[in-house]
Length: 367
Ligand SMILES: *[C@@H]1O[C@H](CO)[C@@H](O)[C@H](O)[C@H]1NC(C)=O
Ligand SMILES: *[C@@H]1O[C@H](CO)[C@@H](O)[C@H](O)[C@H]1NC(C)=O
Ligand SMILES: *[C@@H]1O[C@H](CO)[C@@H](O)[C@H](O)[C@H]1NC(C)=O
Picture 1 (cartoon, protein in one colour):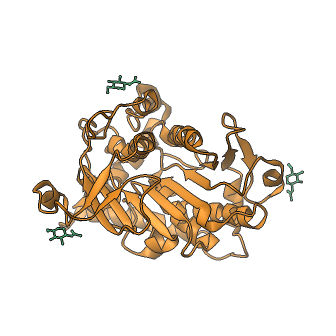
Picture 2 (cartoon, helix red, strand yellow):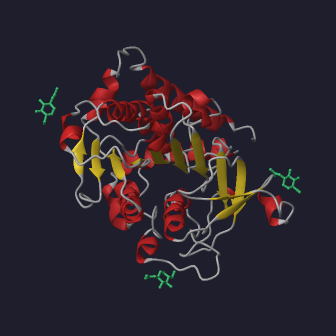
Picture 3 (cartoon, rainbow, N blue to C red):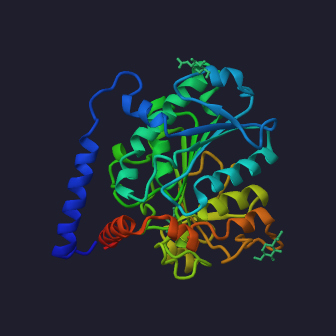
């Protein structure tokens, strides 16, 4: 990493001081579930979807199991919990909703969507410091599914995008998944996450953690932090088909994991990665013949390492001969690209300020 300029350093200092103040707000007070998590609960919408309720879903509440008891939750089928990331353009709930539909076509799961968009804001710093509290809330929900719902932790699969990926790490820790369950991380956020397992997603958070890196080291996290780490097209900004991916920086690449996971459900064997020492080595063919791992629900839990593969720039992203793109997959193509209407909806002055600070961080972090 190159040394940041004095101006950037000063900005960083201000940013980090603000962040530290924000974080210091509520580290104490912890009795079972923290008050912060219960407060956040008012702004979080949790919905259960099953084959019987695949359209509107049924409300759940992490701190009131009456809803679970009255719902169609079925402890005999596996449970998938999905959580979105920071802003992520229009994908907040759409990405989750699309994966939910695809999942329920494959099998009869309990699919739970956690929508925290009411608590999320253009202020990346504010949202970033919500991650541990959000994770705690989801961890408490998992506790409820265990105590009142009767789930088996080994049937539990948490899927999180961006900040949501790190939140799932905290959820796994809070619920005490230990060697059970699985976390799939779609481009875990990079800015303001550092190499300390205590502050981010880590492979110790669940029995099996797989990560799909698509926008490192800009919006996404660069280092391998799972049991398996996939690096499609090298895992970096810009992913093919994302153009310059400049407004807002990297969001198209950042959201690509939704499309790849979806396509892997629709086309078995769509993405098979090869274990390698890096993208350049992979491209040079140095790693041909190494171990492989298949991205998606069926990923072998015994796989370990960093896996590389190439994709097309358009749906179908899979290079498998004869691969086709469904309308659903095509609808994910513009994930992360802000429409003009969305740009207008962000109130511009503070947005521009926060965006500049985020950009500064990004430039600084990526050296
Ligand atoms: C839980 O929710 C039910 C249904 O809305 C409500 O009747 C009950 O009072 C709630 N319990 C608590 C402890 O808030
Ligand atoms: C893959 O293959 C290369 C070349 O044969 C080797 O150097 C490397 O250690 C292998 N394994 C991994 C995990 O990259
Ligand atoms: C999806 O988009 C591709 C082009 O990227 C197109 O060839 C294909 O027909 C589309 N599929 C559907 C079902 O619309």
